[in-house]
Length: 123
Image (cartoon, rainbow, N blue to C red; front, side, top):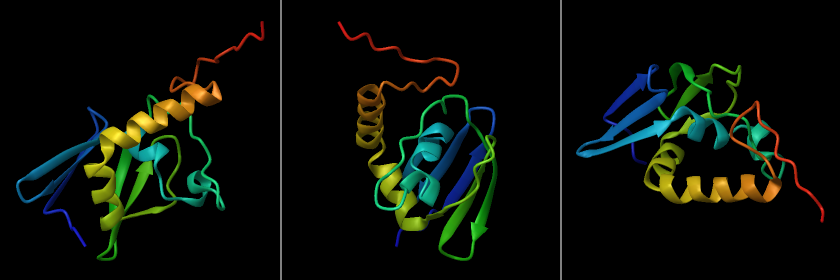
């Protein structure tokens, strides 16, 4: 289990900074929100694609025992506990996970912007 040695919530930049000794990671709130371990996002067997979360921020970070963080997002989402292992996985695979997410959005005709709708023409 990889436990961060330091955790910083940066509300202005909407990021959660994690340190693991000399390793440092900055995870955007939007990235954390769309990868939430909650049932709302992970679904019941099939993940539910989250979209329109480009402006979401983190309003609160709390320890959940000695094994996880409970993140509260400013869109009201506050379920799902981010275990130490899951946070480390997100941090170390952020680039790949983000690319996959953007591909899923495009394939579904969805946008990161909540005020934007993608229209597909069938020609």
